[in-house]
Length: 100
Image 1 (cartoon, helix red, strand yellow):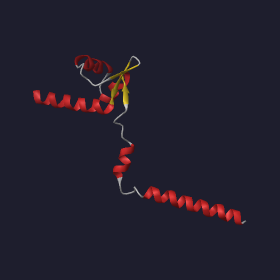
Image 2 (image 1 turned 30 degrees about the vertical axis):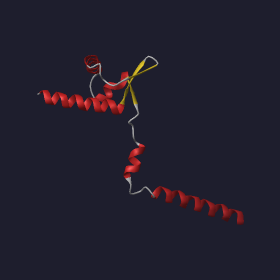
Image 3 (image 1 turned 90 degrees about the horizontal axis):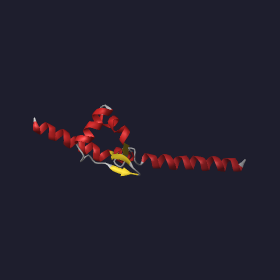
């Protein structure tokens, strides 16, 4: 019976420790935001139109018209770095607004 109490006490102590560690960052959402950081995520060429929010044909046309779009070639496949693509699209949008 004493062994059961010891195991129960050990479980309660461990739970208290993990809860305490979790509460350390409770009021710091910036720490949690860094966990969702997808700056280094790569988008496959066939899925880039989803990210841009346009049709496949429009994405192909945009890529052909702008060879400076940031991309990486890995094993013969084209990938687009998500953060760099987002920044490039924002800059392209700003250039388009300036020309009007």
